[in-house]
Amino acid sequence: PSEEEKRKEAIKRMGPPEGWLPVFLQHPFEEFELKDYISDTFSWWSPYNPQTRRGRYLLYKELEKAPKNEGEVKLYRDLCFDSQGTPLNVDEGFHRGRFCAVKRVPLHVVNRFEERKDPEQPLNDPGCARLLSHFLGARHVVTWYDCAFDDENVYFVSELAN
Image (cartoon, rainbow, N blue to C red; front, side):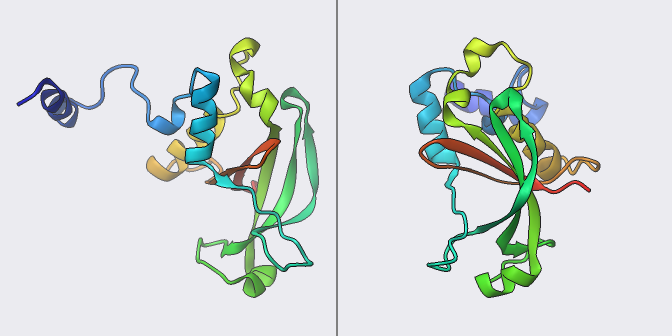
């Protein structure tokens, strides 16, 4: 077997090597990697438009400012899924869609993560929530739903904690 095959077999037997992180917890370290990471990993942000009756997220209200990341957290209704994660059509979503918290962070803030030397890293925090809620089944952690982007911002969508 090749060295790569041996390494993969060792990981299966003994677990990942020290310092290993799942890809969604690894922050890209070059600006070009960051752009590729966001466009390959995140979906396009889709706010509901009443004129076209298209879009996934219906805005309800602002919950709070997020001054550290120059953004805010808003309450939205996800028109595509109910609170159990069951897919809905848009008309059903108005009545049964799940409420979610959406943190908006400007792309220029995400782009300058390396300069900031801040323990709060905009891409790592939702990655941790995703790992804890989806893969480890941790209770008392909000469930991660989605990450999205547009030309100016990155949006982190999670369960609304109440």
